[in-house]
Image 1 (cartoon, rainbow, N blue to C red):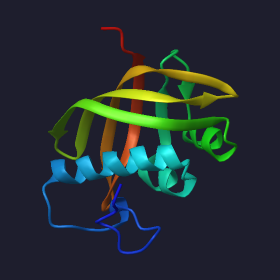
Image 2 (cartoon, one colour):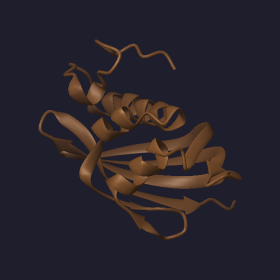
Image 3 (tube, rainbow, N blue to C red):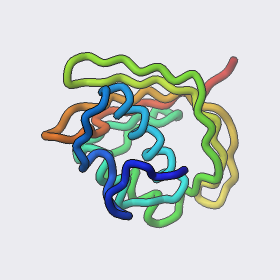
Length: 142
């Protein structure tokens, strides 16, 4: 993904102020999140995620920011591909809710996986930045 909004190699949109529509900001941040997940870019993920993150994964396990980042840092989780579709973004003041269907493949603890999950993320305005405060994943079964 071309990083059109970067002022430096490590600067994310969450650290840069733009005069753009909030929904457009979140669309870009969602793309940056996906790229950071693919790259296991812990530094960028750290910038996008609130310290008090609550993430309920597809198996109902609640994870913290630390456990999520550690999985990327240690390469326990490696994501080979992410394909987003059916993205819905709803603003509620200083809170944005995103729902997206994500086709995902990769490895977890040495075991390959592939499938589709529906993700819901809650982005909150934290100072001048948008951060993910809550995330939930469910296995998609059409």
